[in-house]
Amino acid sequence: MARANWRGGLIWGWTLAVVTFMYLPALCLFLASLTSSRYFIFPITKWGLAWWDKTFASLEIHALFRTSILTAAVVTAIAVVIAFFGALAFARYDWRGRSIYQKIVLLPIFFPQSVLGLALLLWFNALGLQLSWQTAAFAHLVWIIPVVTLVISIQVYSFDPALEEAAFDLGASRFQVFREVTLPVLLPGVFSGALFAFLLSWGNFPLSLFTTGADTTIPEYLYAKMVAGYTPGVPVLGTVSTAGAAILLLGGYALIVLWRRRRET
Amino acid sequence: MGSLGLRHALPLLLFLLLGFAAPLLAVIGYSVMPERTFGLWQAPTLENYVNVFTSTSWISFLTSLTFAGLTVVILAFACYPIAFGLARTFGRWAPFLTLLFTIPLFVSENVRMYGWVLFFIKNGLMLGTLKSLFGFEIESWLFTRGMILLGMVYVYLPFMLFPMTLGIAMVPKETRDAAYDLGASRFQVFREVDLPLSMPGIVIGLLLSFVLAVGAIAEAKVLGGQRAIPITHDIEIAFTYSQNWPLGAALSVLLMLVVGVLVVGVLRRFDLDAILGRR
Image (cartoon, rainbow over the protein chains, first blue to last red):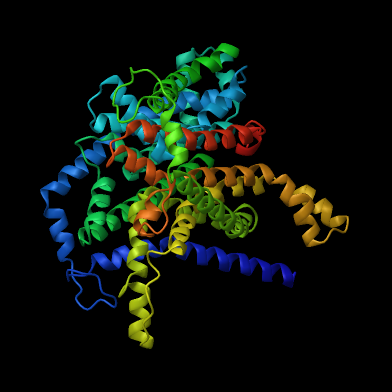
C-alpha cells in the first residue's frame, strides 16, 4: 500500500503544479492592475488602485460592458431553449437519425473558431447584412448551442424516462408532463448550460473579431489595446473578467450542490 | 418514437444549416471567385488555389500543423496523470478541481496570453523576482518559438483533459480488479486494460485539441512576436490588409479540408452514448 500512496502523492503534486500553471497569468494580471506607475515593474514599488478608478470611470468602458452583456444575455436565452430540445433529441429519445445527429452537433465544436468567424463574415456579406452585435450574437450561437446541448445532454443521460411515463399513466397532458416532470428534473443541467452560454459568449474573441462590425466587445477592446502597446487598463479588465468567471462558476456550483442536498433530504 | 426525436432536433438542425453549413458553402463559393473581388456572382476559377501553392503559404501550413502536433503530444503526457486522478483517486475533490480547470476557459485567450507576457517580460514577475532576490539578469524568453508552444499547451489543456477524464471513467473497476487478481502487474493493467478501454475518450481529446490548435492565432501574435507564422495569420492578412477575400477563402477551404477529414474520419468510429455516460 505504501507504493500506492507514493503514486497518489505524485499525482496530487503534479495536478496542483498544473493548477498553479493555469492561474499564473491571472496572478500576473492581478498584480499588474495594482501598480500605479505607468509600466509594470516587479517587485512593485508603487502600489495603488489608481488604474481601477480610471478604468471604471471611463464612459467608453461602460459602453463596452453594455455591448458584451447584451450579446451574452441574448445568446444565453436563445441557446438554452434550442439546446434544451436538442439535448432531449441527443440523449433521451431513440430515433433513426440520432447517431448522425449527435455527430452533426459536435462538428461546430471541432472546428477552428477563427475560420468559423471568417466563414460567417463571408456569409453575412453575401446576404448583405449590416454587421453589429446582433450578427455577433448569431455567430456565438453557432458554437455555443452545440456546447450547451452537450452540457444539458449529460444531465439528460441520467434522467429516468419511467418518470415521464408514470406521469402519462396518471393522466397528465404532454404539456403538464413537460412542466411538472421533465423540466424540474433537468433544471440543474439547464442551469449549468445557461452559465456556460453566458460565460463563453462573454469571453469569446475569435468569433466576435470578424462579426461585430462597428460594435466592440470587451475581448476585442483588450486585444486592440494589447496590440497598440501597454495600458494598465488591460490588467484591470483582465482581472475583472477572471474574477467574474470564477465567482459565477463557483457560486453556480455551490447552488447546484445545495439543490441536490435539499432534494435528497 | 421516431418522429418525436426528430421534432426535438429540428430547431437545432435548422440553426446549424443556416449558421454552419451555409457559411461554409459561402467560403467555398468565394474561394473560386477571381482575385480581389467581393461578390459571389462571377465566373468561377481555380487560380486562388494555384496561388496558394506557388506562394509561401504552405510553410505557414506546416508551421500550424507542427505546432499543433507538438502541443497534442505534450498535452497527452501532461494530462494523463491528472485525468487519472480526476476519474479515480481524487474522490470528493474531483468536482472542485474540475471546476478550477474550467474557469480559465471563460476568460478570452488573448487576456490570458497577456498574463504570460507580464510573467516573462523584462522586469516582469519571473525576471523581476530573479533580479531582486538573486541579482542576476537573463534575456527574456518572450517572442520565441518555445513561448508559442507554451501558450498553446496552456490554452488547449482543458480540451485534452476533460475528454480524457471521461474516457478513463469508462473503464469498469471490476475489469481492473480482475486483471490484478489474475496477477497482472501495474504496467500490464495500464497497457492491457486502462489504455485500450479509455481509448475513445483519449482519442477525442487528441482530436479536439489538435483541431483547435491548428486554428490557433493569438499565441503566435501575443507571445511569439511573429517568430512563427501560423496559417490563420495568412488567412487574416488576406482578409484585412491585402483585401483579397478569394485567396483567404481558398486558404480557409484547405484548412477546413484537413480538419474535416480528421474529424469525420475519427468521429464516425465512436459511439458517443458510451463516452458521455448513457446508462
